[in-house]
Image (cartoon, rainbow, N blue to C red; front, top):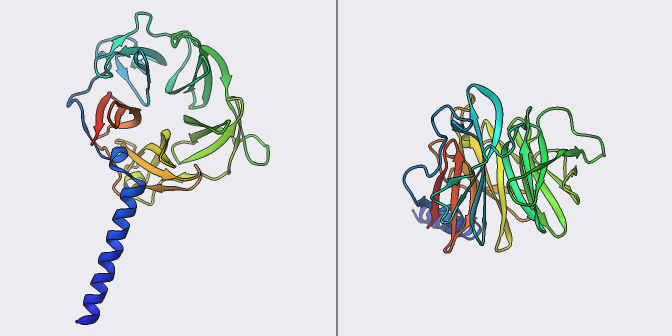
Length: 298
């Protein structure tokens, strides 16, 4: 009996220690979210327009004048995925731009935007799920710079095929790109000029599985730096046919070695393509496929 009590005590200490550690590296402000608005705050028009439906990851950037959103619209009658732009004062009520679609001739989806100096750079999937780069001075007129180029650690180009869901973070004068290949894993490359990239390693830095919620596909949406750690917000699927996706979080000290949040997914119900935006208190989390929903951190 005494031995059993000792074992129970040891296990209790272990689990308490583990729980405390998880709360430390996964603070509630980054992983616990509740709906700010119950219904979707932005959707496709539902009528035969160029953005009858929206899909995959859009991107939201908060600036002094309010919120800016880029999104992908499409209709069943047109295979090309078009770029839309909308603005908001409060991040909840959105106004579509009068000139949408703002790049009507080019296939643009799964977008990610960074600001460098006075210019905005957009990484986006094109036809065939390959990543291309665009630049803009005003957020609406985008100049195509062509496909990015990714090389392996030995200097040879990566194998032909898809390289999509681009996600970029700047660290100490370098840019780091997270990308997926058919959602089979998440790779990491680095660059000085945003167009030429070299893999940090030739294997994924975040694999799908073995957890059931991300067993059949993963893709990174955004990485932020918070109190000494990098937090990666990614979407994943538990289904072989990809019929449903969820929003998840992982943490890293070096962008290479990642630990998944033990209580993933943080949001289910096919609300994925998660983007985190600083708020007056804590953070907002937007899920952007196939409608835009907004959550507030607890």
